[in-house]
Image 1: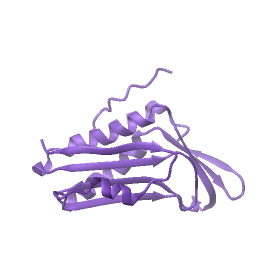
Image 2: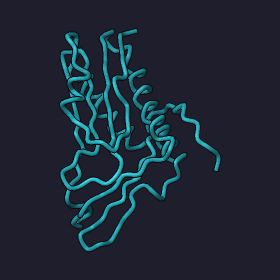
Image 3: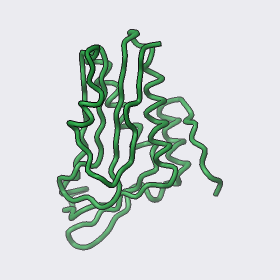
Image 4: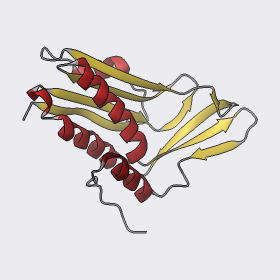
Length: 172
């Protein structure tokens, strides 16, 4: 098995840095470092957004780690080259332009790094129980993802990836 490593998989109320993520995954064996930075935009569905807030279920940190570890495991044998992954998602209130999600992947080759980074973003959104409350300029509020049970996120992730995450959720 290649030397693969989860460098970071965290939820934090503190600002996150794409530069720090890239620096964490870089290495002499990496021919490609790919990153993604999700930023709070000023609109959604044609409506102006004032700010938003992310709320995480208590199981979200473990779910984040498992999403990253599962993806790493799936790609660990490709080309026999090292892969490193770093991902962080903000929680709490964020303003327009704030960074909400940062992912960085290093691999020997660009195609592998791009593929893993893209899958990583999709799987975090599908499998980590984080809900977004959007506050619009007119004062109205919309919750995104709050109508989906926590277990529904893991089922959706399983349907998309064909793998069942090891996340154990409380009954209820």
